[in-house]
Image (cartoon, rainbow, N blue to C red):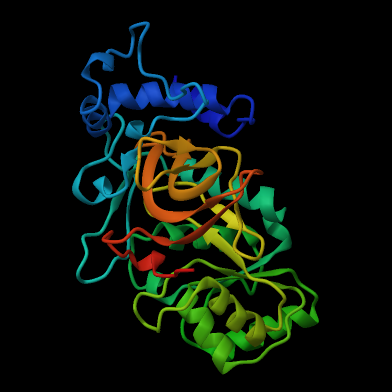
Length: 338
């Protein structure tokens, strides 16, 4: 059964999304103890998933009721798994010394690999046409980062001789980037925000064939800046007109991407909704509020997550992230505000 679900995840269309999500919802309600107990707090009578009045992820407006979304903070305090298994990997958020880190137990890494490879192909084309450079010093200093694994797999799949990770050797990084410019080689510089800012302030370049992608992540190393301020510094330093961004987190196995100016687009198997901060049971497909995410790739954890990110969803389904709810824990990858 799960093999069929996995195939459906990555072949999903806008028309079939809710059907696939419904199947995953029922699977997780049956096999995820924490998700089931969370649901039971709201409606004990609807726990029997085989009854005709079983809970559905859709209501009159085809949206998921808020109480079916698991608060993202549960990944800090609970084992969030659908079925029991020995994980192939345990991803952990970077956090700070004052916070409890989230843990995402991953049953099948091939699902994660499929998710980011398919998303890259969707947004950027053939990975083999790219030189992939990772500027992720803080993430490389620990062994359980989902972002590091993604970057490493993209680097290897590109098979370009200059693809690789570059820590704090900005002089070497500059030479590599200039080499790619001369060769007119499409290059992706995937960097944590504070490292990109440091590099941009120390080296002034004019890049025509390089795409800059910031992943968030100030980690308290620099004064807080708005996204517009960050992108202005990076654009000036690298001589580019726009900065791409990735919206991902430890608790998700999928990422949304911004191809410039801070507006993110989801791959087909991921959907972002907005809930009302004052009335969290009110969920809409568009508007301002707190973001809820449906990530179908989270088959063996939880696909329905209520984040602490505040933003806006536009009519075309794209969205912006403005910051975080007051009093929510600050995670190391999410210290960039708008």
